[in-house]
Length: 149
Image (cartoon, rainbow, N blue to C red; front, top):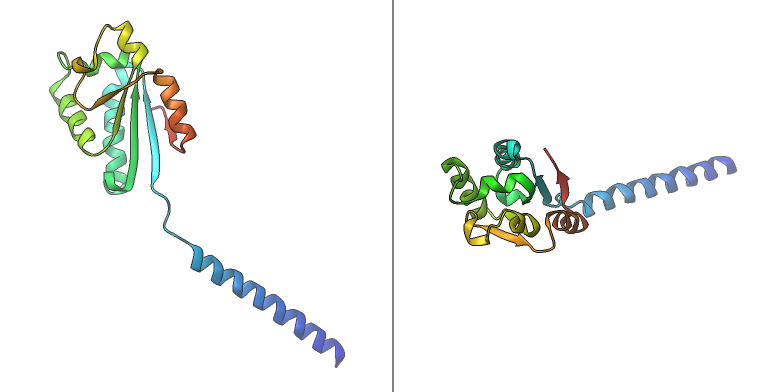
C-alpha cells in the first residue's frame, strides 16, 4: 500500500507540473512580433525585381501594417532612382512605398560618386550618411532581417 501512495503522489506531482506549464504557455503566448525586414539593392538590373519583391512581401503578409520594411540602395542601382530618368512605374511604386512607411535609404557615398543630391532622387529617400553598408548593419543590429534578392 505504501508503494501505491508514493506512485500516486509522484504521478499527481508530474501531472500538476505539466498542467501548470501548459497553462503558463497558453497564458503568456502573445501574437508574433511584427517582422522588420531590410532589402539590400546594389545591382541596377535587379531594381524591378526587388521592387516587385517588396510589393509581394506586403501582399503576402496582408499589407504594410503587418511588416516594417526598409530598402537600402547603393552602387549602380541608385541610378534607377534619379528622378530625371526614373521609369514612371518605378516612380509610382516608390511613392506608394514611401506612403506605406518603407524607409528608402540612399547611400551617401554612392550619391557623392554619382554627383547626385537628395533633391535629384525620387521623393521619399533619405541619405544614409555613413554609407549604405553601414545602414544595413545598423538595421540588422536593430533586429531587421536581411534580404538580398
